[in-house]
Image (cartoon, rainbow, N blue to C red; front, side, top):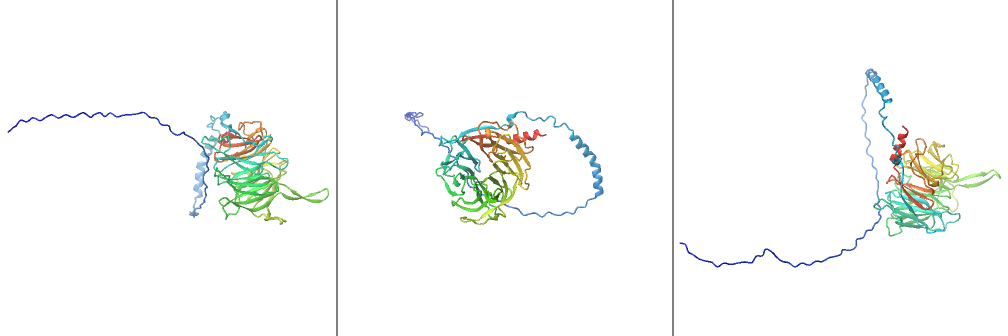
Length: 478
């Protein structure tokens, strides 16, 4: 049943370890580089909608006057006692105003200097403008002229870098045929910029492409120096477009229809404000008296309403609606209209600023070399408030989102903040330096930032704690 049988043994080599050959080697990556490039946001379009008006349901009210009288007799004594107790309460006795002046003191963040190609002449900052995104600043410099301008004008563009600082050198330079007197960015297209020159020309650029000049148009706009260029809304409610307005010492204010997409610019309308008649009493002869426009501003609240400042301190209320056509002269390419409505009490000096309040539709201010800031109601000839300043201010502006604050700059590098509540300067608002400040521009997006230009061609970027300044000023009046 069982058999014995022997098998031969077999063996196998172990393979639990494999030996492999290895060698060391090193490699080098390409050199790492960093490059910064400023960009602007794309074009935006705003659309307004209106819901249907709801019909309010009328409910008949039947009031029992006897019961109402009984209720008031019962409640009134206790309510009066509570109001009297609240009037003499000490609940606010522990509230103290901070004595730390740093909470309301502005600080200078940066100081830059424009490149001066003509070292034999002194360059001063003539105009400043932030674009609609608050990221790019346009700066123009100019020289003092006793005769015709033979300089090449430049507009320098500065764009904030990733550290929220302006670069030491401008990111782009736009060239003009003469010194630039005014610059202004488009209110909705952040890359479109306009500039006016001392020779009466207007330049319009699209600065979106950093590698190209982007010049849209060059216009022979005025016979004399351009004093101001700005973008305004079309007074025609049927046309939701933006127009370019320009003024000059030739006493004309021109409106231009600018088509950015097609690079087409047309003169839409021409207005004459400063051309009046005067009589020479010595020989009873009538002479033509022309006062150039030095400043103007359109109301952001009332369509077609604007105020003009003329040479000699005159202030004129104007309106595009109902402007009277003037007799046509030989050589006039378009009809000329007189938009004058009435005159306000004039300054005893030259006007440096005319600007409407962004907060109230009936208020605007003016500033002149007579060291006065005047607050006007649009329907009142005399100013409702006058702020007297010790040093001459060359530029004044309303503070964005702070209805009761205005800021100005001027001689000896003064920066002054004033309260509209009492017309007094707010102390510790800013420090003074020695160089005259010629221009200012407040950033409406980075609301605490402001830039100033001085008579040495330098820029100063400041930080203003506007909320703290306004709150501190309000508590001071408790």
